[in-house]
Amino acid sequence: MRIKACRKAHFNAAHRLYRKDWSDEKNLQIFGKCSNPKYHGHNYELVVAVIGETDPETGFLMDLKILKEYIKTEVEDYMDHKNLNEEVEEFKSLNPTVENIAYVIWNRLRKKIAPQYDIEVTLYETPRNFVIYKGE
View 1 (cartoon, rainbow, N blue to C red):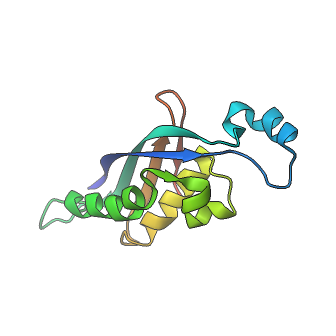
View 2 (cartoon, rainbow, N blue to C red):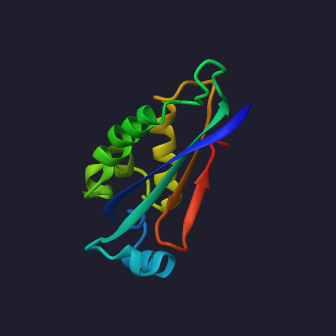
């Protein structure tokens, strides 16, 4: 049986949306108050889905305790209470938009989760603004 198993998580982080090659005025025009040079923060809500066939012996798609640990080490420990622009390696050269944060999370988890499973990352930056990345 093909199924999607999900795990929710949460982390807090600060960031600034801007391009180094643009003036402060252009960054403000494009990114608005999110380009604040003093940064701003979000309480991110994360849903990680693993999709595939269940194991006929166990009935599990994947042991969710293992997925919980992967999320802890690859996302929470790595990004929680961090300034993404300054403390997270990928964002030293990548603008930390919610889209790019989801992309980075997906890639970090993809390295841990067995390749026979598809994964999907849903990341809420606010209760009404979120993105979904499936590695496509």
